Image 1 (tube, rainbow, N blue to C red):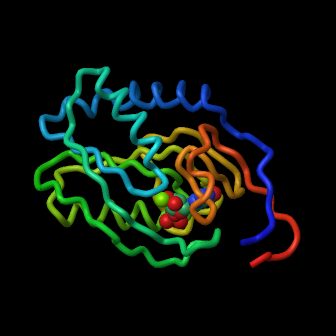
Image 2 (cartoon, rainbow, N blue to C red; image 1 turned 90 degrees about the horizontal axis):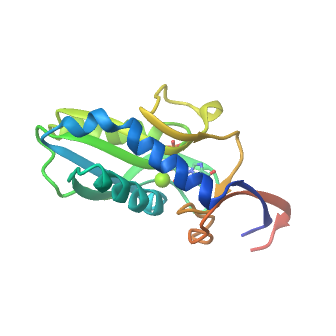
Image 3 (cartoon, rainbow, N blue to C red; image 1 turned 180 degrees about the vertical axis):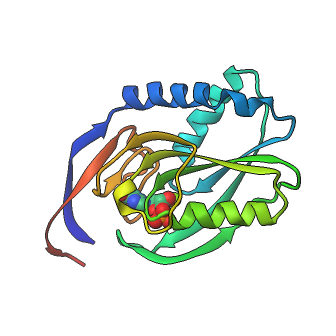
Length: 184
Ligand code: 5GP
Ligand code: MG
C-alpha cells in the first residue's frame, strides 16, 4: 500500500445527510412507478444506499431492493477498464423501473455496463443516482440522473468508499493524499 494520509474532509456527515434527503425529494416522480426496484452497486454504495432507502421509506414508498457487485478496480486506485459481475441482482427486473445506486461515477464504465445489463434483463426503465460525480474523468459518455456532489479528479474515501478495503466506515468523505513511495 502506498504511503498516504487523510486530512481534507470534502463532505461531512451533516452535509451528506442533507444532500441524501434532497436527492430523495428530487427522485419523487420515480415513486409513481408501480414496479420500482432499487439496486445498489456494491460495495462502495452500501452506506449511501442504506441512508437513501430509509429516506425513500419516509415518502411512503416501498420499492423492491437488491444488490449487485460489480468491479472495475483492482486493489489500487486506477480502474482496470473491464467491468466484471461478482454477484448479479436476483430480483426479477422484467418490466420494472430500476434505479441504480452507485458511489462514484468516474470513467462511466460501471454505470454504463449496469444500465445495459438491466435493460437487457427486461427492465422497463433504468435511472441512476450516484453520490459523487467526477465529470473530468469520463471515458464513456454517460450522465447520472441524480448526483449528490461533483468532485475534482482526486481519490476519495469514507462513507462506504475504500482504499484497499480501509476507511469504508468513516462517516464523512475525505480526500486521500499520497506521499512518498509504495510501502508494500
Ligand atoms: P467507473 O466505472 O465509473 O470508472 O468507476 C466507478 C467505480 O470506481 C466507483 O463505483 C468506485 O467504486 C470506484 N472509484 C472511482 N473513483 C474512486 C475514488 O475516488 N475513490 C474510491 N474509493 N473509489 C473510486
Ligand atoms: Mg463502486
